Amino acid sequence: AQKVTQAQTEISVVEKEDVTLDCVYETRDTTYYLFWYKQPPSGELVFLIRRNSFDEQNEISGRYSWNFQKSTSSFNFTITASQVVDSAVYFCALSEANEGTYKYIFGTGTRLKVLA
Amino acid sequence: EAGVTQSPTHLIKTRGQQATLRCSPISGHTSVYWYQQALGLGLQFLLWYDEGEERNRGNFPPRFSGRQFPNYSSELNVNALELEDSALYLCASSLKPGKTEAFFGQGTRLTVV
Image (cartoon, rainbow over all chains, first blue to last red; front, side):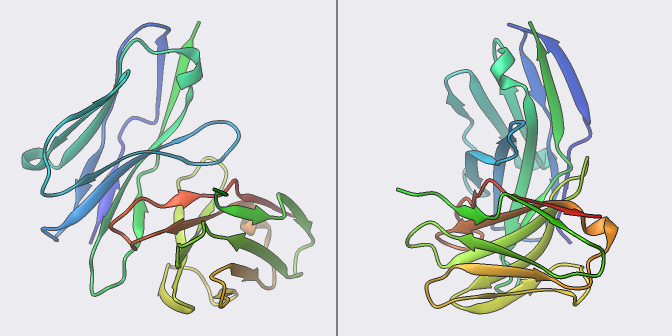
């Protein structure tokens, strides 16, 4: 069965610090997709990134970077020089093809608080 | 381009009543997903509709049901409301089920009193 674990329930950092959010996944499929979402206080989930299981290249987008390692089943998210606007709940998600019953499985989320 | 839209934004119902939540996907998306997010909890998968058919269902009782219309909009019905049904209900749509990202609406906050 597929599962996503975000062990960090809540993280607090001071503005300009770097912070890494951990995500560990479980899947039996060789083809799967990983995602990160941000949920600000307004409630709407904002898509950040998608990674395919066959593409282990790390990605950088501005202050955001993602480290995908199949060997450890991890897909970690780093925010460099954090800002107060980064305060939100961040979710990691997994989808896999299981007899055509695609669904997105989410971790329990990590609440990030960036203090001014 | 309009994103995923949900209505109403807030809904207050009495225990035992029925609630109907609506969702319009992004234009061109045929898949619609429903999730429940109870306070302080993660997203629990409820239902997946694609091309008008229910394709998958999460571990929720039958009083949670829905449908997808020919224009791919969707409706979630919750019958015999219970206090623990109070939650944020999120709808999402995707272009290729599971293979591309799901885009979420702003949610419907359902409060059962």
